[in-house]
Amino acid sequence: MSLNGNPVSDFGLLDESQSFWQKLRKTQTTQIFLVLVIICAIFSFLAPDSFFTIFNARNMFINIASFAILGVGMTFVIITAGIDLSIGSILVFSTVVACKVIVSMGGQGWGASMGGLAACLVTATLWGALNGWLVSVASVPAFIVTLGSLSTVLGLAQIITGGIDLSDATDVMVDKIGFGNVIGEVPALGVIALIFVIFGGVLLHKTKFGLTTYAIGSNIEGCRRVGINVNRHLVYVYALMGFTAGVGGYLSLCLYQQTTIAGQSSTALTVIAGVVIGGTSLFGGYGSIFGTMIGLLIPIVLQNGFIIIGIVPFWQNVAVGVFLVVAVYVDNARRAAAEGGGRSLRKRSLKKELPNAKGNK
Amino acid sequence: MSYVLEAREIIRHYGQVEALRGCNFTVEAGEVTALIGDNGAGKSTLVRILSGTEQPDSGEIIIDGKAITLSTPADAREAGIETVFQDLALCPHLNAVQNMYLGREISRSGILGKFGFLNKKEMSTGSEAAFRDLGATVRSLKASVGSMSGGQRQSIAVARSAAWASKVLFFDEPTAALGVVQKKNVLNLVRRVRDKGIGIVFISHSMPEVLEISDRIQVMRHGKVIADYKSADTNLEELVGAMTGRLDGVNN
Image: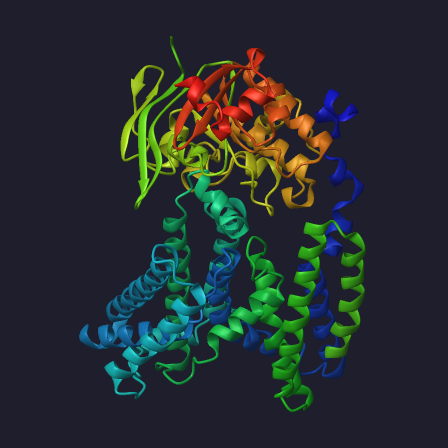
């Protein structure tokens, strides 16, 4: 074993054999980003006057704002190998609470708006933390816990309101946030979402909190053995998910001026699909915020583009479904290649993925 | 006699089953102590208790002459006790450095550190030093550990535990899943850790391996350590005899 003599000289062997660009090209995020660019290029070509405009970009920016914020939380949850199906219900419940607080604080002005915001965020965070507690401490599978709270939390919101949407958003919220611009044509909703996305990206990729999130998704038992407080971290992660649902809820309250009791049943699935399309592994340990944003943008760009070029927008559902399955197939193939060392499998999976992706367009 | 770790009269029940019935066990610094015994003899229970994963019903754990309570794995690590498990306790998606500092990450100094920003450079330098120190063969600091061979992963696991252990290092069947060459490498690592003055407990079912690596061999049977041999003065027959109880009459 010549390696034994001077092991450190072998450091970086693997890194040098593949250049930065070679590695980048192989990641799912890059592939899916290219798909997005191609989709945008096609729509711009087919409808240059209406797709590639500031007005349309602003429109899509607003549409994605709420999903993007939810996507930040969901990326953390899925990287821990968890899932949260309940975010739509949490979102609804927290906006109902926000409306009640706004009314009790006078119904108008910045004071009531901020009071509503605080109530919204606290409520949503607590529901998230409860989910996290049940998942980690009580050891109930995340799928079951959040399926339960999906139903329970929505039910409670319906009991409080009698099933009728509340429309108690203040004028300030609607004018300054929902339809407001920060500068020029830059929408406040989009800027708030962008801040959260950047914050989430830094938290996930640069801090100890983010690294622990990856580690738990990668090997939860190994984390327990080295003394990481896994249960506490999972409560934090699900609480963060709840918090982002609260922010998303408040923003939707600003935009739609009312709660959306019946309108959030597919929110969780849309966000989960976006996260998975963006390359985050449902098995945990792998993923990125950037990928999630691309994964969320694809359905929104498709829907927008289909409407503009006159294709029945329902085709968006068909395309997103296909994307989702292909994305998970690629993820599986990559994990098999990484664990089994089967380089040929990896190449095979890449080749298969490309024709499929083209078929979607 | 001054032991770095001493367990006295440890008793542990699981319901009606008495896994440990007054077990005494000692580890000296700078020595490899093999712990052997048939399945169900209580080895794993003893290791779990001494690494803080489980608590004894009664008995004393003494480290450097001081009685100590190990309520959690964190307590054990604080006391300088680390464990290398047979199923690797590494995170396959993380790289060697991230695994090395798992749960003990170094933060940046100043405000950024308060927010939990990581000092990747210092951790990278520290890992490199730790691997070089042991002569561990690590292909890359940046590649995910899951893409490496079993032997390399076990090298990283050993290096991690060795770097943090200041008193005692448990090896729970560290070579069970490895090939011949990798086994040899791990045994070499064990010797190097011992030479740093750390007390090593080596648990294995492979008698030739035990005889090769250890300085002292303690045999468990029915929840007790029933024999304590110098490796140089014993042989395969005697060890197997002690494990299976053929020598019970002789020892008592």
